[in-house]
Image 1: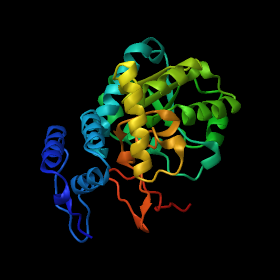
Image 2: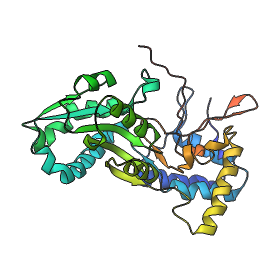
Image 3: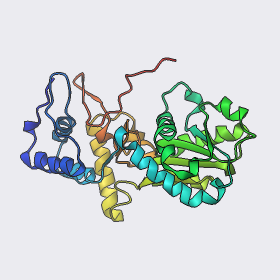
Image 4: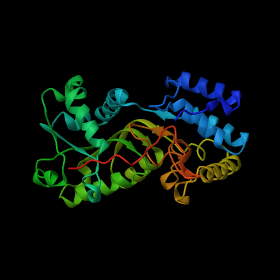
Length: 297
């Protein structure tokens, strides 16, 4: 099905095209076989009730971050540099560095983005840094593996591509502690981090590092009264695109995120990813996080 973006006012098409070009996002035409992100974005903008709503989305999109998988190494290298600068005095005296992908013990079979980070660590990034040349790096993939090696672990790097509210990371840390590893050995490394997640993890006493730290898109970027009005406006926009769960109107835990990684986190404002139904048809989103792809083990 082709998307008809031409019913959207030219003003918004031009403004959106300018943002896409500035950010290096590809502008393509939709075909019968493939949707264009640009066309989907135009279609969703057109579906909003007012120009005021469209203006807010355009304004917010200027701060939207997309990290494609081919950029992961660049972001990961920056995170590692920050980590090494702070922890060099500890790393110099270690023979083995242990790495573990952030995961939820209740969803052990779920595909973990942290595994992707482990892949890059053992492939490209570790070869770039001299600190690793005379050290062994052991990547452990299961909680049982952690328990098996708990007496050997002096520093444990928990890795993921994105940390939003911090809930998943804190749950992982708690499970790691249950396996006999104290939290003073744990360090969390991510590519992109929400400030609320940073506060949550550090508040628990665990250091966390990232190449990019993002704040709340609305609440942290406008004066109080204006922010309150725009927050209510965003909630109204979420209703327009048929978001069923009011707890997601501002993203999970009201994170107000503007981020897309390999998959868009549900911390991101729903306009960009949520796909509700209207008249029996799915309302396609530009940065979908659709869950109709499963992995069997």
